[in-house]
Image (cartoon, rainbow, N blue to C red; front, side):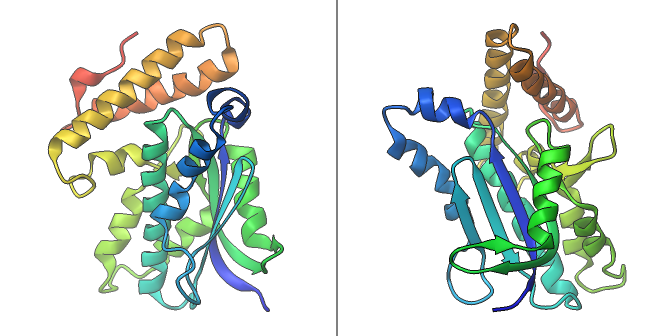
Length: 247
């Protein structure tokens, strides 16, 4: 075995204690099936060089090897693949009122059937624990550097723009996956009314949780951030301004 250069995502399921002890207390199999979406959305275990996913309690680790840092096409495809699928998982879990936070980083990883370690894992974990105070999946600077280092003249440049379109920044200049940008992408859903249905449900859940947790400052803060994020997108041109959360 040896170190592999990888894209690593470390995910923390927010409010997992309540999910286990309350929401799914009498149906742990249902919670297990819900969390299987991480495996469903990634091409897991289908030969060398494919994605490896590990889950333990409220933590999920996604490891995607990069065979060559000099292969611009592979880098762009790998970064897009990871960020886009994490966004899809965020959207699907949100429908069930399950929030996640996390970190995505690049670096060397050593993994066996028993353990995982290396700078890629450490960086992803640190980004999740230090930056992701709200329901976002933060992105390390070295991921962005991998993408922006691809020459502008490179024939695969349209993919570079697609990758960068998945990334946005907060007021502290921290980068994270913009899953609502994915929701509004015309290529995400087969029918336009599906976008409307998701954004409508997004508004309903945020509003409901804000009303239910106005005496719980920790939970309230998460949904207040989501309210601001939601409104930022629905007020954009071609958004759904009538679905703004006003209260």
